[in-house]
Image (cartoon, rainbow, N blue to C red):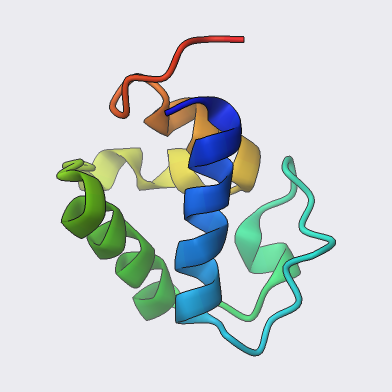
Length: 85
């Protein structure tokens, strides 16, 4: 997967978790929690869905690296076989 495909995948997960949210103006470098009505359970749902779909094990100490779209894509690239750039 490349960065664009990872971003699309994360958007799909967010749409399932927060179907009432408008994701069209989501900014890559602003934390999800500042842009969306997500609570800690929603965040855990994102982590669990990534694990289910891609068998990505994300340690709790790395959760802060999933704070925004940009940081999430950057974090997931090595796990999902994406090429940089």
